[in-house]
Length: 480
Image 1 (cartoon, rainbow, N blue to C red):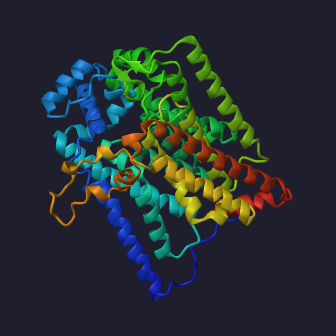
Image 2: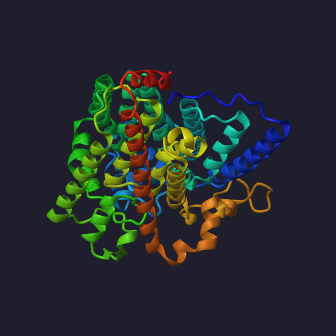
Image 3: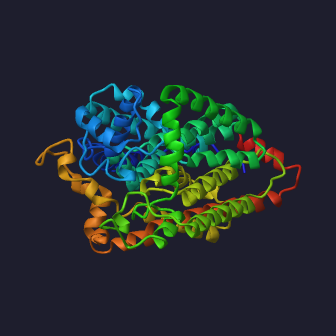
């Protein structure tokens, strides 16, 4: 199934007007939640990483909680409710702090606001690259309107931005990796995956995927770029700091978290092996290192092996390494979703990494899902339910009115219009049934994985039914 260009039918003036109105309304909803309502937030996760980067510049370990708290106070960075538990301090590889060095030269408040603006630029670049790569057959005004609506409804973007997370950067790197793999720019794909893995470890799973697919150049470039980054950061951070990360922080991190926002199969294992109350906190509110016995570690390993084996079985071994772009898309993001499922920690807002899935499927379902209309509708409905489950309600308490750019009474002061805040105000799920959140997020992620697996299998069957002499031609057309 070759890629199709944008629709060549010229939109009528009324269509332009209607699409423009939808774009403006959805765009305001998005910017109100992503920028206007988060401008003065503490951006606490970015703040922690900036303090860690500052410590690394001075040759100090970024993994000492007391040291970071004192440094944060000196820098004017917030310290309330942080630097007291494992997941409220710095836990990333030294490379992550090293990559933030340019921002760390700015005063704390300027740095967090610059990070917020940077996140917007990166996010829009990722959306644009996704649309360019997948090319939904819509006219330009409806393409922009549709993408803006999906973006405005993606509540986890707002949670990520208000915390100052790296998810937009991870999203763009994954989009670059997919585009490069689809267009045979293998060195770029490998480097993008290596950069993503330097921030969060999960994207490294894509190197195993491309190894399985016989894309050895991507794997070689990925490992080479990763090794280069490691050596640079080792020289920058020093052996002792890396030793602390590998022997102390990483083992603690791999035990997972029982917190309600940990959206992974491993969280179920952690909660099952943890008392309901730990150190005076309910397990769903606990953010420190969790106890982990032999049975929990064995169960975790078994789940990881089972998920990887299932993914390999679904992917199969194709007749060639050059896949049609649509099949590559389904497989690529199936692997990403599987990585999120088996990671020790997958916070709710990591769902931002899957934004291209919903953009592509919602805007071009007939192209991405090679099935009869009824089955296509079923898979589209499943992904729509997954979209809702991953995004709503959001963490409403991340958006107090005093985080807004404008004061009450200003025409642009609408923090109560943040989609997750509005939905929570109606459903009261966090207020009255916090345990239900545990039963909402993980099934939504599992449903996403199941839908992507079904789409990958449909593409596999679609190609198996094609005559051998036709398959290379279809592949060549889709890669153009």
